Length: 203
Image 1 (cartoon, rainbow, N blue to C red):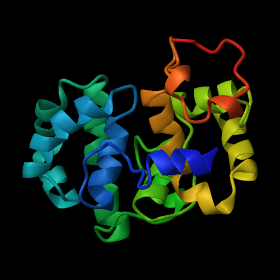
Image 2 (tube, rainbow, N blue to C red):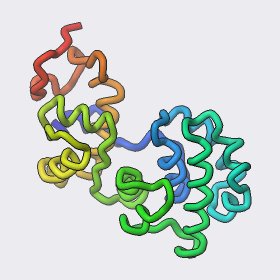
Image 3 (cartoon, one colour):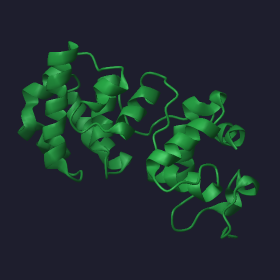
Image 4 (cartoon, rainbow, N blue to C red):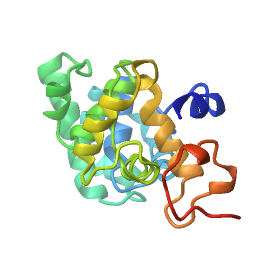
């Protein structure tokens, strides 16, 4: 399955725009319940004026809010972005933490966000389970489970080590562009014959 997905997308990566671990943490924190496209539109302007923890703290909650009002939950996200920036400055010397424990201690950064940062910025073989990964894992029979946490645990067991670094992105992108929620694109799916989904679409 992953051999085929890798052939289609040999270099899978996040569709969020970022330049370093810090801007990635901010972008992923802003992406909760929002599309990558909407986040990229907001951060394009935001990162021009505040692409470091120092600048973000200086900008303040109201300043950050002005840039991200087009994103859902923007008030709370503005508060979290400034708070996490302050913690990175005060507790980590301005460097974005590299451990799950320290990342998850940042406001607005949960298990899934930490997994994305560890995978994308630091090259760790983590698998973040969002709605796309959850759907594809269940629908295909790759890791059928009832909660994101259980899907993640199963994926970490069944995905071969060779593909663990890219698995998160391959599954997200497959879910975003082929294995759609309402009408999956089964006819053009490269893993159709491996998939255990009974209600495959024909056109």
